[in-house]
Length: 430
Image 1 (tube, one colour):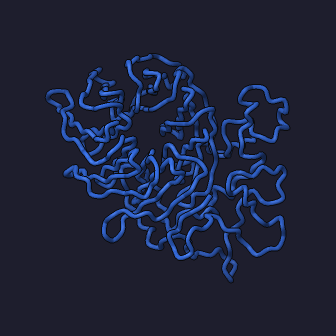
Image 2 (cartoon, one colour):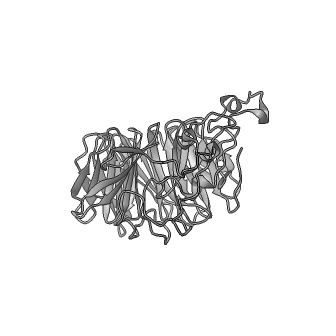
Image 3 (cartoon, one colour):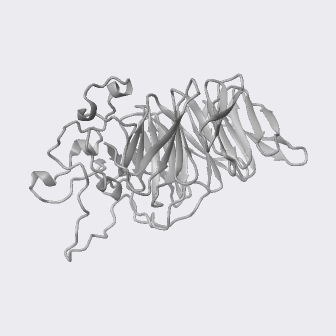
């Protein structure tokens, strides 16, 4: 796990071995930090050491990181932190890593997945769909036949909606976990979101809009090709389209319909991710770029070109923009004095990244969920990027959605939807 500091010393490891003890047992396992230790038992520590102490015996308060002026907070409609101040990115000696003691290698047993592992509890590999002490699997919803491309839980509703490339939207009862309806749309579903009482579904050449309170069923024409991303902001519905355009509609209350409002042009390939924050619309594209658009005049005000592959997901968190890409990086952007966004931190993974989701754990601490194309979802404390846990799946997790009361949902390439819950008390997985 590397970090691009863009500083005088070039690339550095995110984690540095702490302490000056010569005791072999007081060294942290380098491979564990990289998430790939296969020694069992390992002679080195699978946890972080305590923070260094100052000369008077108290923990040092010297800030570490890339900037010392990142502590001020400004809330956005997206993922917001708690009241603590942040002055560091990518220092992996946070509580998440320190509290976790690994008992097995961080690799899922393929034989267990197939139901044929003969080692049982003695197997050195994981016999669990998750690794971490702070969340647990509640149930699994089966029915979709292909990858789950969207999950939505409308506010005030007791129904969960899931969309898939099998061309169906399924409706699930939140109390029983049973599927109560299947809607066949006749085209692969590229995305699905909810906003208030509305469900929006992107399929080739059309956006479907359903109001679950009034029963209104609308079809919004205009897209040329698949609709990969949808987001609502400043009273507009935005859609990222296969042809590289972003279409916008505004709801006409009197006519009870959505009217075309604008077409945002600039990307040269498909727009696959959208997010709204700080009075801007951010779009990630297959052309490897992120564009920032003003929500006031819908003009492009900046193009970010630091990624070297498809920008799969963008997320607003406090005053930062986070982006992930198939180039195996997560980039953290912050506004410079000029007002333009610049990369302040780069987190490196060993696999391409598919989607980001920000939420708070049971202790109200901010956590970033990152889906990778090695069929895993990694949990990171922010801003330290200390690894907090993992979720495993048979195929890539393409959808992650936050729910109420500590719930969250994941949808993978097999069509499976899993329901998870943050635990008040740690629940260890072996």
